[in-house]
Image 1: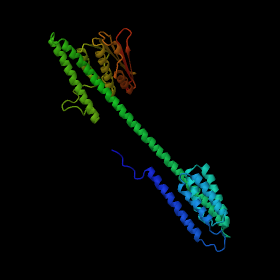
Image 2 (image 1 turned 30 degrees about the horizontal axis):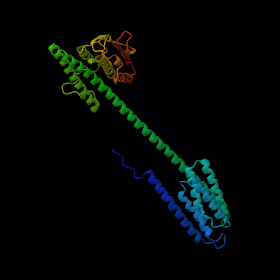
Image 3 (image 1 turned 180 degrees about the vertical axis):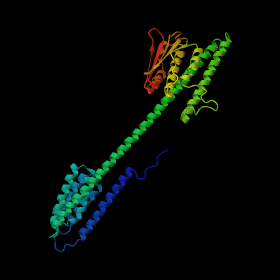
Image 4 (image 1 turned 135 degrees about the horizontal axis):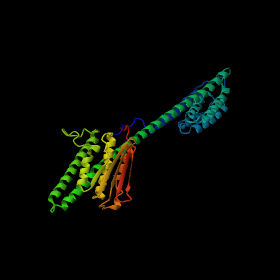
Length: 400
């Protein structure tokens, strides 16, 4: 679902700000020109209005329309025009607002090393205009222009700091959002890899058993019908178990619970983890690979580690079926306070694909990923005396 668009995007706000600046510049020019035209001067304190006075007034106020884009050049230009205007002894009060706004803009958009000199320049220009005030209010005029320069600088500087704080908060918000999206992507990737491992483990093993048993049945179909029938039964059992595991896995993916996928009356009918090792060995034996278990198979492992060990053992036996399907396999379990180790070795008898015994595809990668999740490791490679060897080591928390 797409998010609703904000009522005021940044380009729109910038356009509105530009329009406001143009309106302010034109409005201030009109008001100042009206004041200059109508302000009484019976004592002749100021020079009579002429083309220069109105032209300089335009030069002071019109550049304010672009003050946000060029704050420092606008201030310099306005200050120079104001100095000329005041030096010609025109009525001084009408230019104060323009110069004050230019000073505020610099303070709100530039660092203090720039804005403080700008405020000093503003104060000096305004101070130059106090010589034109009526006699008797010179001190008041100095206080007024000083407070004007100070107030415009302070308000602009505070505005700048608030804007910088807002930008930092916005940057932090973007960073947090990016990190959250990255965590989400990583979680999705991890979940996809987990699904891929499960699919590989379920499909590869059972398809290998089915393929081998179908080949046996075809080979002895006429010469030994009972053996062919037994091979077909083994293939059918493997296909049925693959279907059960696929349904269980899909249910877990939909509902997030291992037990939600069991059908009524079938709760935990199929053993999970190392409890399913005897049926696995039976299928592999039926496929022509003799498996011998040495040591005690642990029965009280944490659920995740239990399934991890089972899947790695299943993948190792599946690769024996694929690449050395008449070999003899020895599976050795050792577990103590330091953790659990499993070694699966085969003698390589009947090895048909020696160049591919390095677990092509996703097999070895999936085994290592499973072990890494629980802080363990998997090493696999050919044996000097022939055959292949897979070593799994796993630490077991709170091992008893």
